[in-house]
Image (spheres, helix red, strand yellow):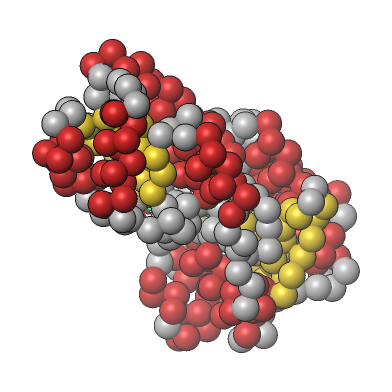
Length: 319
Ligand code: F6P
């Protein structure tokens, strides 16, 4: 193996730049050439590929977003589009590709692997919804962003004795909501793992009011229900002013924390180690503080992320 490619794909996440830097610097120190693919699979299909040097990744470790750019590119599901992408990689003589992204990006990497092109997946998403790793790159930075927002909401909802709903990203995974609820001291939590039972929620809120709670914060995972409608329902049923705040893409931006920079650097360098060992079709993770790798096809088809029942129980106890 002499030349490798790297791309970032799907929703950007803080730490993606550090991961690209990790790949580039580790590969160069092994004597490999590295090529950056712009705007994820879309750029791969359009052959927007350029050689990267040491200085291409200078001054990026501390930056949010991804300097390579990213895109959602559903067209990559089409085998002809993927065949063109492989063709483009071959034109540049690139032997293997490192894909940094979430589950959708892993799917693309899996398909390329099935077509005989070796890929290594690095988990880069704020959702923490990728199997085979305890943490995804960007998740803990986003968690701090969410907590910062919840702290601010606490000030205003307690001043006005209001109920606040805060809608947190995560797609179909409640990890970001769960952890923010614990760290932000939220009163109620609604995630894909808990489900939404409006009557039960209402009963809990009323119990809180009966016990003398002056305000409450409800952490809700996106896509479960309309946060504004839920706020109206709660206000109508309890007589307490209720406001919804949708944090949205604020959660995706900002400087990566030290943890994410280090995780991303480790993962980037580890991906290069795997390629040097001749391994392809793997995805990288960190489990119990150790770098691990799994078969990418197995990770997507069979491995499930564990539901953190212990933390849901803790949240229940502390609310
Ligand atoms: O996967 C990251 C994420 O931010 C999810 O939490 C969210 O559902 C989605 O991306 C939003 O996607 P987009 O930026 O394409 O609207």
